[in-house]
Length: 376
Figure 1 (cartoon, rainbow, N blue to C red):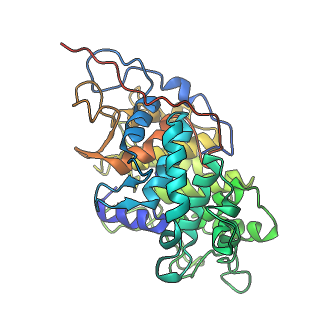
Figure 2: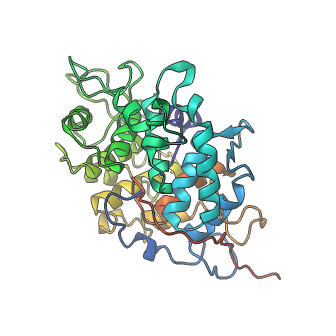
């Protein structure tokens, strides 16, 4: 994903994950398929890629429970929520999930309502993290009205007029934020007629090729073709989030999105933000992770059409992970381009764990897994 688009998408959901990046639908065989030697390394790994990534994330959680954002060097509520989702999806880091949840309960205020205005994407992400951690999002950190995240999220939805079903201000609404809001309501099983209104709005934003644009200002106009140079047209990230939201709510698609992902996949099995096969664009871990999660939700991950040159999407995603060749502090982390990436790791781990959004609470191990690498 181009850096500018990557940060634009992250801002829309106030994270990424992937990510990020989780299961209203049962996990498929992805986790089993991914129990393989970690790529890019010497020797044989004794943990799965999901375990290795979860171990890295667990060690990245600070003593306060917050995840310190790698770019700003400040505690980040969005990254902390993403870390909770990733660790629960992988089934490890019980102590870190507990401490991260406690920190988030006391530090979500400005994140979910920057400048005093409720942000549905941020509210949705914190609700998803709360559900995954086994904490009640209706009493998140207290019993006051501000602690009822579900009611606050529902209050952002427009119920009348041409924008009926939109969460938040129409000018700032995106397929990302709409999907996160709906995934959060699916996670708490709050799916009444108004939730269906939001789902209907998202469904109607789907393009004829099966994908979604980040923002589609006019439904009467056809979606442009994906264009990585102009940053326009349907993209894999927005499509993946919309797919998971609609599947989680038991909805239907006007156009089958599986074909969109097949046309978007790169020759090496990975996915880029704007998937246009043969355009020379490299795939990235964030887009690959979200696409894998969408295919898990659709039950299509194992289809032969997604095997490129013998490489499955899951294996392509794992190729971004540092293995035994890297410094011990990097092992298990994912890279974006040629650089280590905290955000990519947070988004990739749920996907390599074989889990799609929303993540359900589960019994966790206290382990912080590490690769077992040869010393010579």
